[in-house]
Length: 261
Image (cartoon, rainbow, N blue to C red; front, side, top):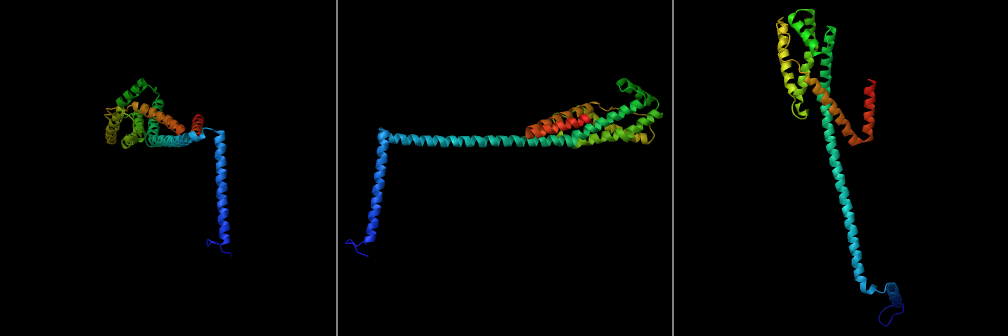
């Protein structure tokens, strides 16, 4: 290759000149662009710094707004998750109350009530306070009569085992009872204990006492039935809040099944 006086080859020199021409062309184009902006916006040269600052402030506001929306959305999601978790915990406790305590207790108290009414009907006594009092008087006066024998069989085989089971359920699951402990449950304990003692006397053919000092508290039946219905309604409401339309369908199916039964 030909040598340039300054020590550069002709090829390198031509490349150098080409790059310089490109740089000049770019500077010229940039100057033309700035000239056009100045022509369109005569005050651009004076207020360019303010415009740049305004754009920066606008970008910062957009960024802050985006952060605020994201934070708000995250907070709302957290609140919804906390509420859903609380509802699930409450629903689990309600299910537990119905399954372990109030479902069986309601069934037991209903069965004892039906059994006692059936006994009164078999012995032609009205299912009222007067009719029960008449039956009790006859049993006390004639403890070895057929009516008294049927009464003892009902107590030994049906009523007392069920009442004992109800007492055990309550004793084992007192933590599932909401609110104050009902007074009628204390009387149920006394009734079951006294009746167990009475059964031992009947085994020895001692019929001097046919009824315990503490009679069966009917309030237990009312309390168990009321709590059962309240918890079922609560269960339905919680499911509606958690699962929406699926819970509504479940409720309709349950009501239809109850109607058919």
